[in-house]
Image (tube, rainbow over all chains, first blue to last red; front, side, top):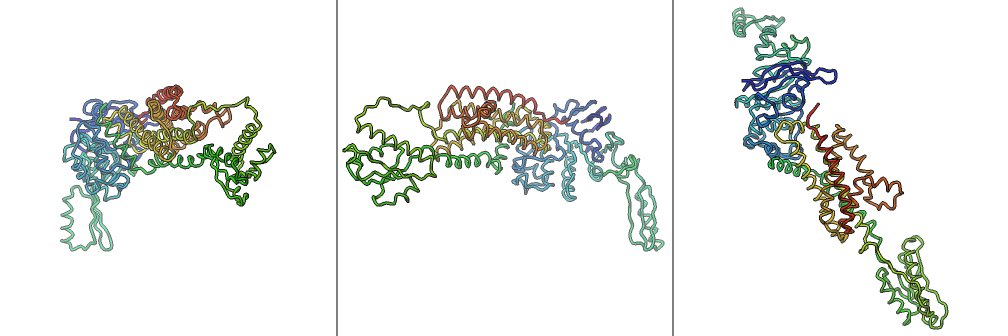
Amino acid sequence: MNVIEVRGLTKVYGNVVAVDNISFDVRKGEVFSLLGPNGAGKTTTVEIIEGIRKPTKGEIKVFGGKVERAKEKIGVLPQEFQSMERLTVRETLEYFSSFYKKSMDIEELIEMVGLTEKKNTLYKNLSGGQKRALGVAIALVNDPSLIFLDEPTTGLDPAARRNLWKAIRKLKEGRKTVFLTTHYMEEAEYLADRVAIMHHGKIIAIDEPYKLIEKYGEKTRVIIKKIDSEEEMEINDEREIAKIIEKLKEKGIKYERIEIKRPTLEDVFLKLTGEGLT
Amino acid sequence: MRAKAIIGDIKASVKNWYRNKAALFWTLAFPILLILLFGEIFSGGNESYTIYIKDMDDSTLSHALINAMNNISIINLQPIGKNADVKEYAKKHAVLEIPHDFQNAIFEGKRCNLTLYLDPSKEQTNSAIRSFISGIVNEINLRFNNASIIVGYEEKYVVEEQFKYIDFFIPGIIGMTIMTSAIYGSIEINVKYRKRGMLKKLLTTPLQKGEWILSKMIYQLMISFISTIAIIAVGITVFHLKASFNFTSILIIIAASFAFTGIGMIIARFVNEEETADSAASAITFPMMFLAGTFFPLEIMPSFLQIVAKILPLYYVNEGLRNAMIYHDGNAAMLNAVVIATFAIIVFGIGVVLTNWKEE
């Protein structure tokens, strides 16, 4: 079943086409990621789906109808969202929960995003990562079945990013549908069931991450660094690595280390557009 | 309209307010400081005048004169000894010297002079004292010449009580505080919340724009009344202000809160940057504060500025509050209330229509 259906979505600002006739579906229970560099049209797309902006053209269905009718069932973390400065973590969640008919247990929610120790801290005294974690918690306060996260980890340090990723992964276990926009390919690769790659307002590829890599990426390469030289080979199957090591042992070849270079979504993007992702 | 959402939003706004030291300063501490400062500076108007009296005659008649003068409430007589250095005392307050032959001269119908020593640097006080003394001298002359008084005069105040500067000033400060907190408050909510993605977020929740505006208005009214009560409380305890908090004054405070919130909403619609919005608010509030008769009566301003004042909404708020709370002129207060309420309906209506959470 499709939770979101987008058909022929176009958004034009003056003479700039921000989103150019895109169509895609988001399936129930998946983490769907819109991946692309800054300015590709990701935020415009997600904000049109959320009902924040009006499309120039196209048809959008959320739970089979208008998004305005589905507000009780969706949770949104807007890009660069900042909550009220002088409310504590707990008060912030209580505030947002007052808008909904259904509300999650606040204490449980605080624990889920790892803010238990900070629950009585004012918003303005939280770190960047904690603010973003609270933003995710706010998006979950009504126990939504569809969650939009727009660039949730931009500007966070690697540790804070990892923590947030763990929280987002838990959502998938709760069988929630997640719509994630990001320009970090590791994020999409780590979290997404399906990835749509966006470039200059168009979706240029859409599939499961490993399938995209298989289809557009280079083959996995094994580089053997010897004392005075190095040997590089392409392999089709990673199980071949074991054989390579065995051979090295047999022949008694000494080496410093072995590097395995797997193709990534970055390579897919490079291949498709001829440009880097970031 | 759902009460749960509206109460939730009001609670959050109030918490955010009382934890914000800057907001507390502008809504409470600043108006109170202004009252204490200006009230002290300008409260000298109706004080009594101290006059040192040097009675060289020490006769029945000189004592009678001193007694008579003591009955004038605004004169505070302080006797000084016959050998006192007049010039030293005159540096502090005026000195009136009764000559040693005062009683004799009068009984014998001879001329004698009362001498008034004044410090030329205190001209304002001097002229008041001069007129008391010349009044007394005239009275004595008439009495002892057996002349009859043909033309007298009587003073009547247009209003029943006599008002002090502080009575004029406090309603002005209430008007000013409501204006600044409503304009800056609504700009902060609209511009800052837009910048912080808060409006986007609200748009994706079931909270309706109408519920949100209603909640923000109730919050703004609470702030207006908290400021007003604090200002009046200080006025009563420190300056013995006699203000009444009646229906018309409440109506004016409500109308003013709506009107100035509306102005803030309109500014916020056209200015997206926080700093620019603050400057725009200052550009509106500061001239209005000074031109609308907040600190000084309009009558002391040039006539063209008086005309300008009468197109400013704050003028009607200030005048209305004065008429309602201090002068007890119910009709004038109601007229001001009608003007400001009409303005509020128009401006707030435009503000609501212009307030848009959606992005382009």
